[in-house]
Image (cartoon, rainbow, N blue to C red):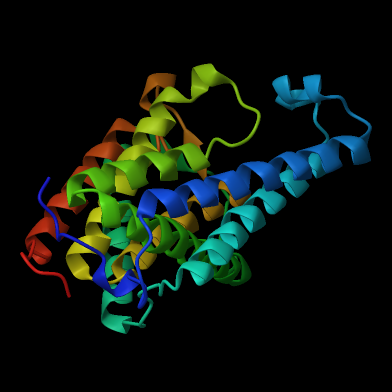
Length: 280
């Protein structure tokens, strides 16, 4: 995988500490903070550690609080490490690149849904409508998640990895971290394999876009379109599924057609942003 060699605009102005050192500091802070947060939640809800092996026994409120705290810890630890490192996230706004990502995401989702409908895998539920407030609230949620996650995974983590690793290796490593971060909760390990592969591929595409375009904004747009789709379909039960379970119809992480669409998006962005031999 040949990509742009570095995330130069994320480099600190002073003496540069190895990226692996900063990442160890980051992960150490995350693990420590998360352990404290889990201990506090268990004490507050009167549960023992054994309950973590059985997600179904956890109160819904505890799961929501855990997820919220996890997100704050991941972002807060990154901010703490990165500011002390002197790094700068390359976050200069680019409306055209944001629109480009949104357009590619929107078109690919429309085609994906159209193909699945033609195959008889999905259909619209009778009488289901999207209220304008649902569309707008889902868009706000999608943009918030996309911006924060692109700063974390493709700004902070990829920026540190690119200090020590060749571009291809940095892309793969950041994609693996991105995928793993989505499973930091009690789960059934039998249901992880396919979603992990999908998230790994998505993380690799977003990291490649970041290095090739020299901007976080194409990835923000593409990422936001995915989160918008997941939010809308999850909250409204807009789609009825008719396909065999192995197809994972409607899913973006474990659906083979979604993975194929992701591959086409990657090829399009490779053509749109050819790799350069020098950093910008």
